[in-house]
Image (tube, rainbow, N blue to C red):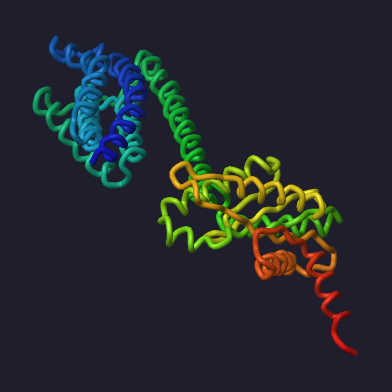
Amino acid sequence: MENRRGKGLSFAKRIYTPRIIGLGVGCISVIGAMYPLSLPGWVWALLLFNGYAWAHVAYLMSTRSTSPYQAEQRNFLYDSLFGGFWAAATQFTPLTAVTILSLIAMNNVAAGGRRLFMRGLLAQAVGVGVAWALFGIRFNPDVDLLEVYTCLPMLTLYPMVIGMACYQLAIKLSEHKRALSALSRIDSLTGLLNHGSWKDLLSLEFHQRQQQHGVATIALIDIDHFKRINDTHGHIVGDTVLRQLSLELRRHLRENDLVGRYGGDEFCVILAQMQSEKAAKIMERLRETLGNYRHPQIPELRISLSIGLAGFKPAFSDAATWLNAADRALYVAKRNGRNQVVTSEDTLTHSTQVVLQLPV
């Protein structure tokens, strides 16, 4: 309910300034058409109220309502009612009537689509009926010079105001779209890239390395025995560990390094323009930092990391092959006792040693 009220208030605020300007210049148009006519004083008083006070009254009615959006929709119908009334009161002199009725119809379509447009037409018809009942059914096909001049502000200024309002709304929508797009790429717990976004960037990085023949390294990071941490201390503590690791990753890495949460307790990094030897030193410092971390409420909690690294090689056929190389290095780190950093080159050396030890 509060969310709907907030959106309704935002809608009323966006309408407020265009309504002030539209009614103000619209009043000038009606004055130009009414001036030659002999109408009672209360009609002029009503015109001034509609032109220069109604916008403020409508805004107060909307903002004080429990449902501002619905109140504003009713205000659009009142605008249409007034518009029909003034079109008929000025004897449907062509330029004034068409200007008022068409711009009001445009507002209704922009604010509420077809439904508000149809309801607005009905409200305009009611306004016409009231004016005809009071002043009789009259039509004036002539357009004098005064009417032309008094309609010019409405025909020039008001469309500019509406155009600017639409432009500002489009900018806000674009900002919201970018924010939503960013949120869809981010893991909500750690604030890092999520699995899908990181893999998309990995594919881009792979193709760039192929084309530019540059260097880069992938790191896969696994929190050792993370399930045991959750089972022993609870998921809240487990989430704290994940956030601590994400914090240290940001501290240890450069701004252009791409960091993501690959799975439940597995993180991934693309270290652009970095050889695996230098990346291994950075990952070793990260491993030591997390090893020294102490939870304020659970000092006996220990965190260790197993990390697998793979530098880019032109022989890799695709990004998945590159990633698999890092995954194999991570597997070796776990198999050899965890809490260590292993590169794909280390795994090749280890495999060679095993082969050499086999009996001939």
